[in-house]
Length: 122
Image (cartoon, rainbow, N blue to C red; front, side, top):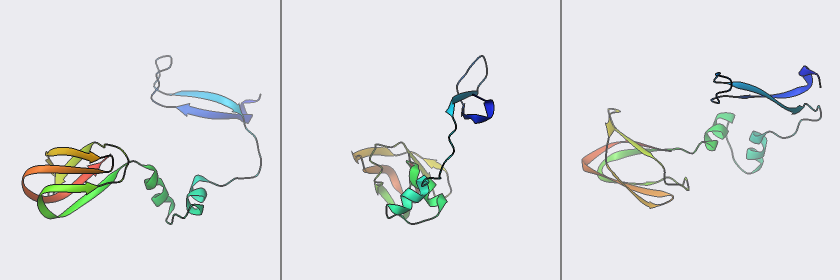
């Protein structure tokens, strides 16, 4: 098989022969009709938005903005997981609170006082 006719996959983060990245050839390239992209399928499934919207939908993260100062924040994130939580106040300083996982889609965060800010869940 000629070198130009192979499918090349570059694996990063794997240490091979003392190097951090590694190139591996996994098969022969086949030419043919272009199929639907993942973005096309996303649109066909009733979603709307740009390619950037599609890419963001692939990420398991949620940003919550707490506009009203509260001592307890209830956050419905709908990620289907128990995410890690980072809280920042309105000055973007990290704040710590007690996180309670209500279920895989909802958390409550309790603080020692009322404030507003943002919660980043992933």
